[in-house]
Length: 468
Image (cartoon, rainbow, N blue to C red):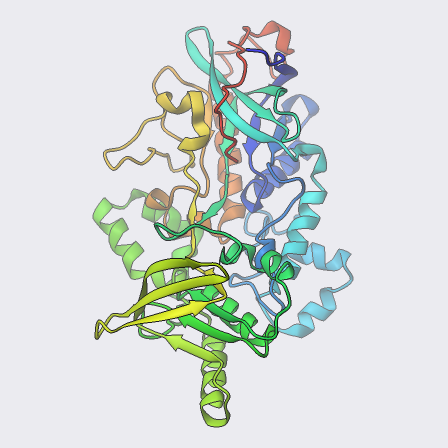
């Protein structure tokens, strides 16, 4: 096919992670701490492949003053190992800010500070991660009649003709979240998703006046509305949402127990009807919900403008955008007021879609392993309590999908609340699987690649799309 043959990395990895966001960073820490407590022969060999050129986590929403909505104690490690040197408190100590943070009397760090913490932790694991690596395919490797290994095919963006093959006993797909964009809407230089907000604003030409329209009713929508209103003192900012008003997040003590580690197991083993009921009851803990302090601040601003003018901040509540019409210098929105059916037309210089995220479909990453993964009647991948995908009986290699199984593990599946505990559960599962499969391998851990059966190496598919 004209491509150079792929290269193969010597040895077999016990774990290959797809993506290196918070979830897989927590797993990498768990593996690192496990390896430091066992002999060299019992250590796990792991590598994580990340598409980005360096670590980054929602950089476009690191707004001034924005805080986390989860306690700093639910960091990468503390719930699993409170004495870990990778804790948020350890990070603060290395930055000489521990006493200052204590005096701040808060459980919720600044978002930019938490990003710095994640970046600090990722930097300590540089030997376990390869950036600029796009995963193209997962291919089964049969040994003694069983799919015992998975070949992970990746490439660097600047080297499209060169692929790297790494062989794994277990693959952990933590591909993160993708922006949710309304049907029929095309993102461009005038219509953005809020995930790119700061990057887009930095490139925005300076004009004396702008009209921004923010679509959405959640925390991100409220933060974007407040940020634009503050940053552009001459601009008009319209917030459009289908609710009658912004709803406060329910973060009371009892309700927050839905994020407890024990709640994950209870949810997983509950009947389907109970799962649906719990998700419906507690959506207000995470979806389309706003911190009450921010709601009060926005209300204070709009009331002050009514008193003193000029009116720059507008809330089109109980309203829905029915269509978006592109203009040479902006967008014309056709909006319907839901209670009355009244329609209005609003022209905007910039439209910001704060319409949320959805977990990336891990099936787009599975490639050649897809047909060996079991799917339920609802079309979802069947997953175990340990986040492993149920596979055909002739498959012993493990595939894990943390962050993409809200339907099975509950509302905290894609959130930060349980990533430390989840990392420990996945690590424990990998270790148990290794013990169970020891007889299968008359092959010892760390066996050189040459003694394994040759994989069916092929040139990369011409139309293969990187998905991590």
